[in-house]
Structure formats: C-alpha cells, structure tokens
Amino acid sequence: MRRALISDIHANLEGLQAVLEDIRVQHVDQIYCLGDIIGYGPNPCECLDLVIENCSLTILGTPDQAAMIDPDGFNPVALGAVYWTRDQLEKEIAQSEQGARRWDFIGELPTHQEEGDYLFVHGSPREPTNEYVFPEDVYNHTKLVSLFERVEQYCFQGHTHIPGVFTEDRDFISPEECDYQYRLGQSKIMVNVGSVGQPRDEDPRSCYVILDDMENLLTYRRVEYPCQQTADKIYKIPDLDDMLGNRLLTGR
Image 1 (tube, rainbow, N blue to C red):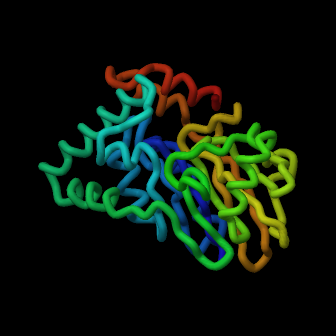
Image 2 (cartoon, rainbow, N blue to C red):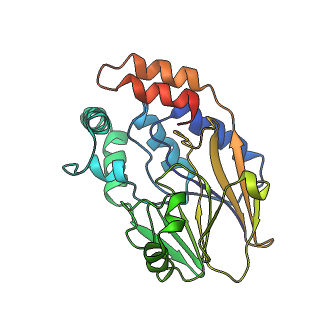
C-alpha cells in the first residue's frame, strides 16, 4: 500500500489543493492527515471539506481541538486565529448541514492510530496532540529515550512543521540529507512529515510524505503553491495577524 501522509494544513486552501493535485499523480491508495487542518489560515471550512472528502484517516491536531474547547497555552497571535476560526465554523453550523458535519467531524477525531508497526499521531508518541519534538531534541537524551520507549517501530507525526527523520541513536536527518528518500529498516524511527500549509524549515513549498509498504520506503515531496495568494487573503482579515501571511512567503 502507498499512503500519502499530510499534516499541518492550517486552513491554507491553496497549499492543500496543490498537494492533493500532486498526490493524484503519485499512485497513492490512501491519504492520512495527521492533524491541524485549521488555525492560522483564511479557509478553515473549505480545508475541512477537502479533508473529509479525501482522507481515510484524520488525527486530532492542536488548533482542531482548540476550536472545540477553551484554548490553553496559545500566544496572542495564535489565540486570535483560534477565535476567528471558531467564529467561521459556528456561523456555518446555523447555515447548512455541512457546517454541522464539519463540527461533528472535528469532535470525533482520534488522538492517535496504531496499525501494526505504524503509530500515527500529531505531536509525539508520548503526548499525541500537544507535545513538540524539535530537531534539537536529539541533544535531550532523556526526552528521546522516553519518546522511543513508546514507539513500537515507526511513528509518524507533525506539529513542528519541520520535516525529517529522528533515529533511535539520536540523529535527525532532514529530507535534503537523505535525498528526499529514507529506507525503513529494523531500527525505530520517528518521522515528521512536514507541513502542507505553513512550512517552517525555510522552504515555503508545501511538504508531505509518501509511505510505501511494499518498498519499505519514505519519500518526501515538496510542492509549490501560490503562497502570495494565501498571504493576501490573511492580510484582508483583521483578526488574523499579518505575521501569519508573511511567514508563508519565507517558510519560517
């Protein structure tokens, strides 16, 4: 089976549309979304509709959860985006059946999914929704040991928007360092699949992963999209900080 693993869309419709178009020509059997469909970007409803339509599995992300409950631990920019996003979803509930369907969909999302050797989460194997695992955590021996104790073989995650492979011997391998492909072996790994809608590795292109069971191979895909168009939408929404648009142009 070939799965496309996407994450951290953040209501970026142009990014998601470009990635789905790229997936369509990659002979993929299923699409899994590892969370953060909404938050920060200008098109939460449209992105939810595309995920509902196209993804076989969707995992709960942090802004997804925050849309349903009182958010905690968000900075002022993120908090403003959460409240604006919630307003958009609530308006749609009263106007259409699809609005109610979106709300129900978010409320029923699982925090993780186990499939044989594979664990799918948003944040980390230890705290599947909220915990960040950054590249510099390879220097935190205690944290890495604790995380890998919870990994059967392979864990796939997002949340940081920084793609790459964490190995059990405390190495972080970026897509560039492995020529965008990584062969699955006997060693445990954690794989950050990158971000569709808000990359933060200084590459503004959308990022996702293809997981090929037959070949035991991970392939990172980078996809260009009209990020200026998304940024311009953000600039026109007073409740979304301009910084959320600016960062799309630099991938930071």
